[in-house]
Length: 148
Image 1: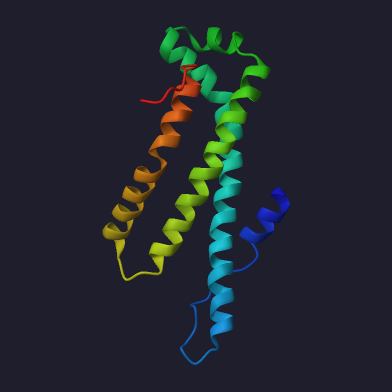
Image 2 (image 1 turned 30 degrees about the horizontal axis):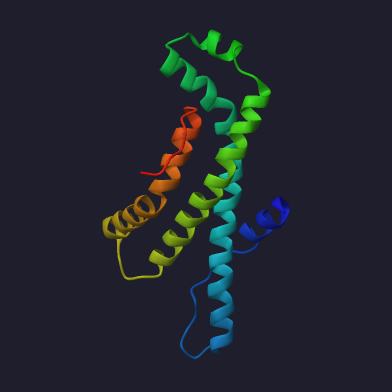
């Protein structure tokens, strides 16, 4: 599955969507292929980031919360804890990263420029992904997740 995602992400460079004279079918395929590429790039990044986070965040959290040294934090880490945290991090990243890439790709097709496009992308991402970020934070700190 990861190889398929990589193949989609790197399969082509994206020309402009073409002129109005081109038939609508080629425009539709190009648009869908463009979105699939953005989603797959986000999915690949999500898996890589989840693997990195799973093995670094537990140590970082111990240093910050327990105020221990880095050596003590690394000595107290277990591979099983890292793998368990990966099972939390990966699904959350698989929601967040592709969402960001697709929103960014869609907004790139608008007439918005620079700051406006970035501000809207950031607002949409933060608004829709904040609950997932909060769940991931509570899991990383071994806190219970409860409704309000």
